[in-house]
Image (cartoon, rainbow, N blue to C red):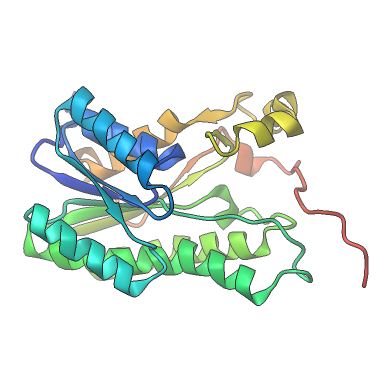
Length: 266
């Protein structure tokens, strides 16, 4: 069996300070990759992940600030990375945000925030990463989407739309970057236990979720990180523009939880 080895390669993970992003950072580092952990608001958490990675896996790691929705921030982040390493091999666009609101009550600001972080951010980061990958032998871009890039849900019109856009962005970038030896793919997680949503899942009811998910269990961060490891590796060299759903079959189930607050007509 072919071994997955990222020694000598550099990876950047946006939103890497916690949750799925942190798990991806650990997984890539455990297989030898040097990792840049992007953060926006929580520098302390990012630095803790960096310290853990350095001590446990003996690779190079740095915490790098950027609001991925800001062109200036993203450019500055990659200019900093240029000073630290010679090129980029893997970009994981993981940073994302979700709010819940009725489509009629949603503000323009709320819509724009979700779209800017979830869709514009991956585009901005991919542009910068691709220019660096093009100077090397190519690279891999993995976009972290959601089952809601295809499964609609009440209260999440902006979020679902942003993830549907990210899915199509992945496919278009795959077509345009393949001649530069840059592969692009996306991963769409379903219900995954993270620090941020663990309490929410418990409040809704773990057993309810298990009934909704055909496999009968809620996913773990490790499930998503393993998928990233595969897609970013040479073992997936023939995978271009694909969407990998990590959801225990959840997207195939028509029973859905409605997170939308009850609305009174105004």
